[in-house]
Length: 136
Image 1 (tube, rainbow, N blue to C red):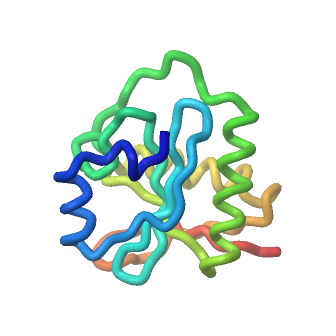
Image 2 (cartoon, rainbow, N blue to C red):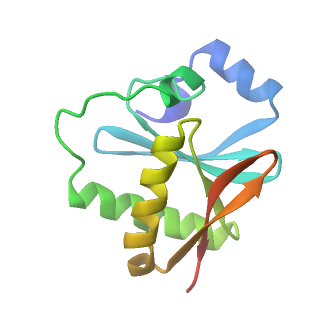
Image 3 (cartoon, rainbow, N blue to C red):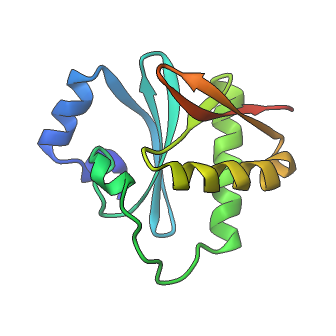
């Protein structure tokens, strides 16, 4: 099920009021991967299906994994992020939870180069976030 189909009317209104747009979304295993335009930037959203991606409490909550994501899912996620990073001249990957951001940073530093991705921490607005760009 696509992200825009999962959003409640309240969430859709919040996205519209915040001048955000879901540009692309796709299901990968038990997750929904989305590209969201927000104030001229393109941000990656990865959420377990059924969770409210607009609710910041979900970003700050650690949900137990029934099983870690398979390499096949990770491969699909990295390939899609690489495609979006190339198309949109970079994407922002982040979370309201600094621990999750550290994990994302490690993942992109370790696996990103295999997919033609470079990553760096940069100031976005008033916070630091991971910026992922295409190198190919």
